[in-house]
Amino acid sequence: MAGGCRGPHGRCRPVAPRAGRPHGAGKTSIGRRVSKALGIDFIDTDTAVQREHGPIEQIFQTHGEAAFRAWERAAVREALSRGDVVVSLGGGAVLDADTRADLAECRVVMLTVDPRVVAGRIHGTTRPLLAGEDPLVRWRRIWQERRSLYESVADITIDTSTGHLQHVVDEIATWARREPEPTEPRDPEKEQS
Ligand SMILES: Nc1ncnc2c1ncn2[C@@H]1O[C@H](COP(=O)(O)OP(=O)(O)O)[C@@H](O)[C@H]1O
Ligand SMILES: O=C(O)C1=C[C@@H](OP(=O)(O)O)[C@@H](O)[C@H](O)C1
Ligand SMILES: [Mg+2]
Image (tube, rainbow, N blue to C red; front, side):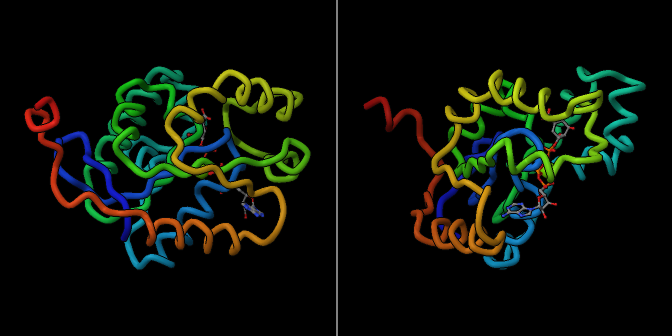
């Protein structure tokens, strides 16, 4: 596929991860479909964390957010070090500076969604950071806190508020095929000269 990421191990790795607005922007559902459209593997980093450590809400309850972030970072690092793969990140993955540095070398799609639309998508959610009386108030606050981080890592931004999910998938797949893939790992010495 087009584009590429020099992953945490310094090797040239084609990849199309996506950051996005917090919760409900469609990172997981769209990422999975994009990987199918491109015929490559898909990794959702939340799924990877849960496979090793159990349900996210239980991780937050038992071990706290810091432990989740450390396990999330390990999952992101591992996912971005893979070959052709679409990676869906959890909405808070960009809080980690090392992850942001890794993403600077990847093609990153930022998915946005209007707050009026996301209300329906996060209704009844078990996501711990949205737990409480008004998930939408929390969602808006998280968006304001993280917005600049999302924007700092994104190569393109696509809104998922209207239209069919498959249209977004097609748009991303077309973009990914068009984007040039780096063919060699970056050579820092050459870049300095
Ligand atoms: N146009 C759309 N784009 C993205 N998601 C949509 C769309 N329409 C409905 N949805 C639904 O919204 C939800 C998005 O949740 P999810 O993919 O888990 O988001 P995230 O991983 O960003 O939290 C899914 O249930 C998805 O089916
Ligand atoms: O925004 C966040 O901090 C989180 C987002 C979640 O993923 P989604 O963005 O896929 O819901 C999940 O990683 C965890 O609940 C924390
Ligand atoms: Mg998700």
